[in-house]
Length: 240
Ligand code: DX5
Ligand code: ZN
Image (cartoon, rainbow, N blue to C red; front, side):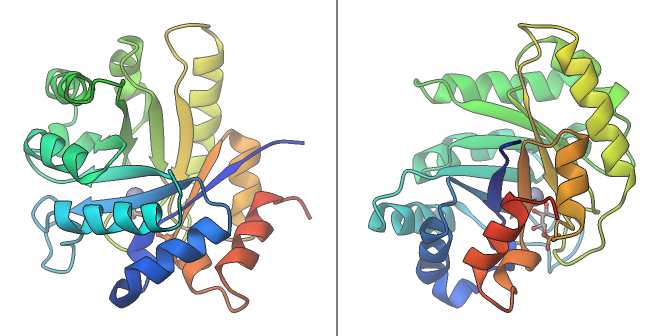
């Protein structure tokens, strides 16, 4: 049976009770939490302004409070992401997922620089990834992936910015293509595949079949009528 990791996206949590929401995730055995860092500039909306370093620290403390070393994935939909690396690492962020389109798209140089910096900042080998919008082809990140610097690839199945959108099925082909491409070579392409956005009890199984190893889910989990744990269980074994 396939093993899939569920990563709750705190964008959909109740922020007036972040500690309680994190605790729910930990109790549901989540080992990774997804934190959408939006600056309101790259995603040009005053509503797309989310978690800063202090909030990341509050999330980290909430994990500590449950004796959990959950991995905090920071999805960096921000302009000038480089300047956030040190403060976010100090706040307890574990992995940076840089948004391809926020780094000048085809400018692989800027992204490589960000990743190298992030890896240098954390002595214990910070892992880094890249995320691509629904409209960006997987081929465009091949040169970056060839460098061997990328530990995870986040395939967005919705436009970044807001939770609760509909899953775009074109993400499935991208997952298949990337998985196939990765599996052609042994060493340099060992990245994890995440799918982010629109995950629910229906889309989870197709995403897993297509090759996603990690499902990022916000609205579905936090608004689940039977509670977050039930939602996690449902999409962990997504074959009906
Ligand atoms: C999209 C974010 C996602 C978002 C997913 O802007 O990158 O992480 O929180 O939310 P749902 O699961 O509600 O689509
Ligand atoms: Zn995200």
